[in-house]
Image 1 (tube, helix red, strand yellow):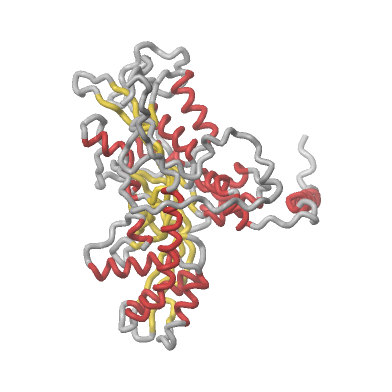
Image 2 (tube, helix red, strand yellow):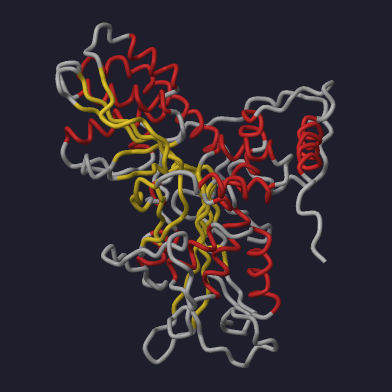
Length: 158
Length: 329
């Protein structure tokens, strides 16, 4: 999973860690993939906006020397969505980029995942996870091929 | 005399019409899509994101199209767009040691754990024009090697473990300055300096960086490490209370290592300059780390006192040891 591959620290609470993993999959998915995933769930409770889906910014931060004090690196566009299902469950999404349709579907999936549909949501996201993991692995293999393998030259007089 | 306050509107409208016409160019040539720019002029996109101070490749690509390839104009467009959006909050500091490495080079530590990884580099290409590109030849598939995702610790962490380098101390209680919200006051603290450098013009920074080595200063730094790749951006929304993964961002990080001969309080050790930039922006990250190192106050281990005054004291850059380094690690 990309979330782990990129070293973001999963929460110690396994439930939150699993929810973060679902959110990470949704950020890496395309809008079409998420639409298909939602359709794959069949009948689901209707969702209404808890807060209008909107574009905004998050200030990204780095650390001095990689491990020191934080500093502001620059902003990123982020789209957030918050929905409430008819049964009262709420779902949230915060994603890089400006795709409001994708963020809203991700918020609905987040809400569904927190109830009896958890296994079904995980199932419809599996092909997306596999696609993302496959692409990351292929990229890693291409990069690994450019790794320098040093060897010691033996000098003639030795 | 003050005359003619009105009357330019038609000319301005026509000029913008002409701009749109010239931007499109001859219709016999296919229209360029932002997707093509984002994927095939990726380094221009990275520069616009870095200096526009906004991570959004699709938006930067569109800005490049709108500006007809004038990157500084595109950067203006991105900066203006940035001011139209509300800020949800501050992200968690990214962990670059957990980067999915696409390139990683060290000049100070040849056989480093995790290895030297060249990645998609212009190095060793001889800088000869490749006329095959004009012919539209599809490149062969790149080589692949099975990998076990070996950890790639930062070189500075390795040196730190041996007590060879000055330490950075994380202090998450300290307030992080933001020059987009408060006017810059001089001398600026390092957090503000790094923020300014991260969004500064690459050419200007490069000239400053060079001048610390070959012009007003005679420092002799080494590239401790340069790496680029993806890290996960994270944000803790108030309503959730845990870190939400926003998505992967590509960053370039440079750790510049410099000699320090020690002082009454401090043992001899290596000091460091730091560069962190959006996208694959190696030249910019290196220049940033040189200037970060040069701007360190004289009171810290980051600078030994200059042996003589610089010829032109209007230069704000503190100079370091004027003796060329005679050894590397």
